[in-house]
Amino acid sequence: MPVDECVTVKGSPVRSLQKFIEADLTPAQRETVYGALPPEYSTRFRGPILPTETIPVHMLNVFTEEGAKAKGESVEVFGRRAGREAASDAVKGIYRFLAMVMTPPALLAKAGQMWSALYNRGRMQVDEQTSNGARISLLDFPSELAGCSRTTGWIERMAEMTGVQNLEVEHTQCFVKGAPHCEWRISWK
Image: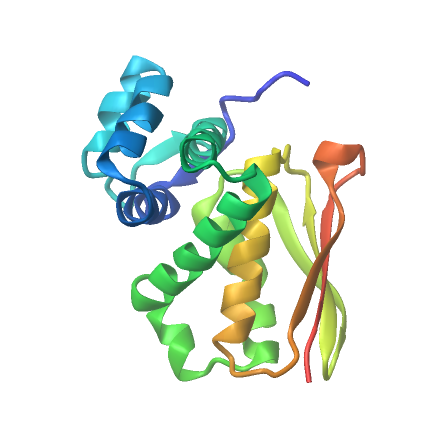
């Protein structure tokens, strides 16, 4: 499947991944990651990324994949951990207002807005919402495995921060695996 370089993400998720890689990888592993990136992005990702900058989502995914490879983890595991850290970082930063009213319904009500504030393509839709669960769909978005994994971790950590118990997040459909879109089932008590 060809990569669409026009699909972009704002700088905040890129900055979160930079911080995660800085904290999680050794200096030698980080050099391996930067050395595997195209020169333009090796230079860009070594320096500060402004929150208003846009980066092709594909390059964020390549950055994640190379981090996983250097760490010796699967993309799914590394990406999910990176997504969890990005959610924690977001609540300290751009979504700090949510920390004050963080309940599962409040968070789910903002999911679509949060997505569209960061990405120039795709729609995050929440439906089948009950008092202890929901379905989250990512529509009209050309997902890649690294992005799916980061999103899974992000959803998981954001839900945990609401204080719910017995949280389960399952990526039930995946665009990468041939589904028309990605979908997650989330449940809690």
